[in-house]
Image 1 (cartoon, helix red, strand yellow):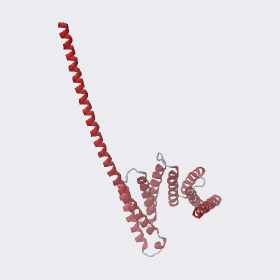
Image 2 (cartoon, rainbow, N blue to C red):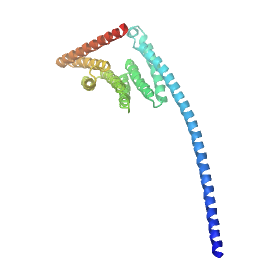
Image 3 (cartoon, one colour):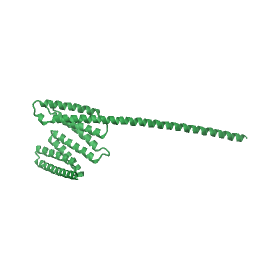
Image 4 (cartoon, rainbow, N blue to C red):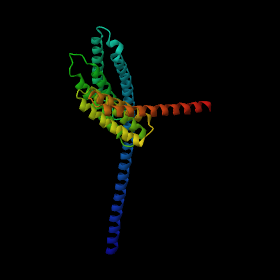
Length: 276
């Protein structure tokens, strides 16, 4: 009888423990379900915030694009060669350039997110600012060239970074590299040291020719190569190296012929499509 009672007691204890475990499991399940619901709620909030952030970024970029377009229009006004010859217009051009630079400074300080478009636009602000600084060539502001060069260097650095972005289409990377090379050419034109300018242009030409080896009929690359090699030939002529200047101007002519041939081919293809 004592054995039976002992066994019964053990069974009761086991039953109690089983019930406790059961309740613990139920509580754990309830906690897990509550946590899952909370996670879903937080995810929805995060998604809503991300959507708002995305919309805010898109709006900021739209505003940025509008501001950048306005500044580019100002740049065209400042660069107008007809205005340059009008008496008293130099002060007006300087004022326009100064206003545009101030606006660009604000845009660069604010930043526009980490999207590819945002980074591309930011790189463009440095190029435009370099163009504006290059035009502020009054006698009062003797350091305009250095400021312009600094902006161009920042633009090329940012474009090089964009060209190396992960999973970027080859065509887009090529566009960024070509833009970077064209800015390098503008920077070289500003250099007072002729030998330094030639070295910079030779480096840019080597990069352009490397791109041409991988994309021989790319109009963007050919256009950049032609502009660079023309500047190189001009600088060499100014430095008294007529032989190198002739060689590079002939190469520029070859690039132009190739561009004309490609453009004719594109026009013919376009005409066939219209005929169809």
